[in-house]
Length: 238
Image 1 (tube, rainbow, N blue to C red):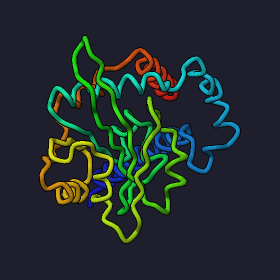
Image 2: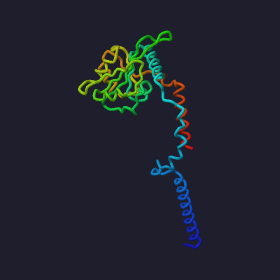
Image 3: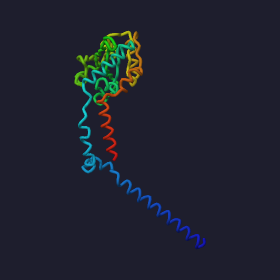
């Protein structure tokens, strides 16, 4: 191998080494500026977010009066669609209508259901009303009754024993057992099937767009909460 070729090879290897060192250095300085997992939660990292702690102090949770307006709006839609009830599991829809989410009640094989039945007449000149019931396992009824579920009237708790069919017990909360009953679109299939088996003369259908639209229309209170949450999220990235 000629001396010229050896020199060029040496220079090439040296160049690659320098590039490798530069890349490693860049990576070190870049990642060293990012908090490590073990550093999260320390006083220094918490101090960076101290200004965000009270950023939404001027906002308030959704009040009981707004939940009642949601019940009335849902009852109006149910009556217009010739449906008698709306049923949901803990989740986004149950939280919207009953302040009942998976945060305060986790889903399991034992169903806990929010049941809203409509009565009265729909329309601008009349006022539809809603009854709120909760189907709960009997051994967990005390915890269910402690849930902060808003209602114009007293919430009816329907308890089902361990040796009973919960869906057959749920029928007690329904005034019309032969009409159309809407279930939340996110409800688990075995629950919808269980309700249909317990109510052979009723139609158990997924809630239509008319009901979904009720959640899409945001009140001023919801907009305030969403706006503030968005501001906190953006500020945390800066």
